Length: 410
Image (tube, rainbow, N blue to C red; front, side):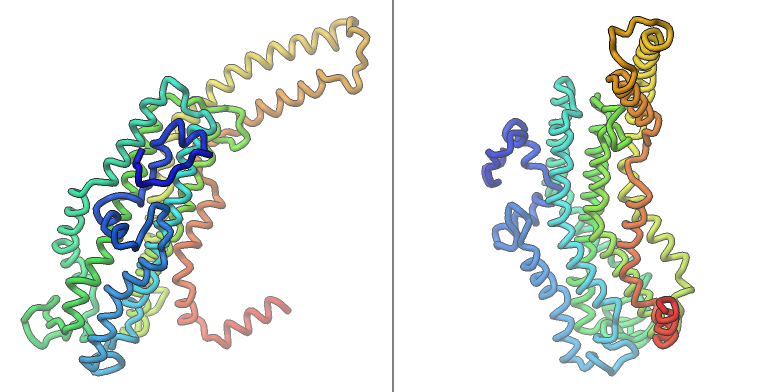
């Protein structure tokens, strides 16, 4: 067990399996160690406000200062800094949400993973493989090679992606068609644009790519667990054999979905306010974004579908045989024989047992291979669409919207 982590002697599961105590997709890796030494993070991942302030001071505040010096804060170019909604949405909404997601994911996933042991879903014969899956996930999380590769990626591929999606007009970070110096596309970078290109945007891309890597670790861990023998419970009321708690993992990533939505909503807002586009023109992009986000979080849970279906088949077979035997005895005693040991039919425990068996058999028949529900899909979709709500006002005048609301109420 990592001696730097706090003790949890009151938790018998953590004591018996220290790997569970150390499990976290967030608290590890060279950057986390650096932030921890700088007292910007701790062993509980709770210093969120400090990290948000630090991120804003690095990626947004210098842009504000440089634009003020260059005279592009409110004018001087087609898109000044303050009216650039995309930049503020990405740096002041998206990045803080991704940092906040670290705390939520850390707190929720550790408890979710512990339930594999707490609910005794992992039998003793499979425990070593389960612990090995935990160790493998933590080794992936702590890899310094991966973080170096992500940094290299944002300064190579990430640079060209930004060139591809930027607006084709003069802005606070680049003047279009005025030269061929250091710049993006056919434009020349301003001082603020240099900071944006080589500091602010790479930081954002690194945070985003590191979240993608964490999701990959989580998916690989779930896949490894799905390959071991699990002691699922066909009659569990969650209709997932006892694995229904895994659905909570998708909710933990909801702030990340909102961050992605904020970035895209900001980009669309710039097109609407600076290029005369309409929100309706981006319907396909929004649908694709929501679909990709929801699939990204729910697809890893599909690896347990074969296990759940196998548990259902076994449950139907075993409970079917047990039910058949019970029904024969029930039929013989109460319908085919007069020997009832003096017990009255009304109020007999046999009737209650018969109902209980029927309920258990119904639960098995209603088992679902998909751990996520319709309500979960709706909530994840809502988390991603929330940043787009202000853009709805660009399609419907405020007075008309108020008239509709008042008409609906009264």
